[in-house]
Length: 379
Ligand SMILES: [Fe+2]
Ligand SMILES: [Fe+2]
Image (cartoon, rainbow, N blue to C red; front, side):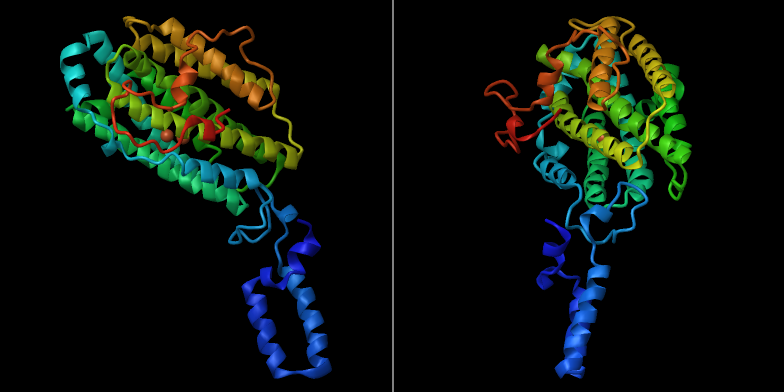
């Protein structure tokens, strides 16, 4: 819709202008009224918001006016996100309690507990990062609306881990402190804090190109690495148990979370691409190279810790190899060079886990389906 057709239509003009116009008409009348009308129409046009005034950051269009959209894809993300709606209480966990106590061996329990410990800390960080730092910098409401949903989803994920931890009777003092005392878990959180805290602060101005570049790189790290690789790949040790019929309730919870995270990652990548285009910014290739290398190193150390002993069907080498494969995918989605050329898809079943289309007699849980995988564009 072009400017003229959008705002020559008075039904769509800002409410405040319509009221003002009506009052003045009743006070004047005749030729004066016609003159005033023309003037007010002009003023209203100046007040109106046009899509091309919107920007990802530093825009001046009214942040309280949702439409017309400049970024209709952001609204579609919001609608899609609402198709994946659940609470952790809906997924039966009784068999998981039995599996955890009687079927998992010590190496499998070690993997399970430490993956949960990492994920729960990460999701708190994700919630705060999006809600307190990224969202406030967006200057188009359709971007903020999806991120508001994302903030809720990160909180829902935290609830989900807490529900699993409580249901299985794990020691909360121990699980929640693990990231502080296990160096290999701490290193991932520390890297995220270092890359996000300095740049993604509330109130930080994006007033020059260096600040814009640092913001883009930090949000890229958050969306493409933290969510797009570390979360996406981070669920896979528990999916490996699920594939053997173990911890199926917890794994199903993680599948719901994974669907959210794929959307978070895809949205973030879309925003970053838009930002780079609007601001005519180029990311520093050396800074990107360092980021990917750091991310790989801490992920490999983490895999070495959680999989000190391999479990059936899964080991540290597979975990690291899959990180490199997913990292390449995220780079391609960003329009960047692959950081790990030649990386192979060593866990081809992982992508299938993102598609929650339930098969009869497989999950054996509730019959409700919120959305079939075909309705959601993941990648
Ligand atoms: Fe999350
Ligand atoms: Fe997320």
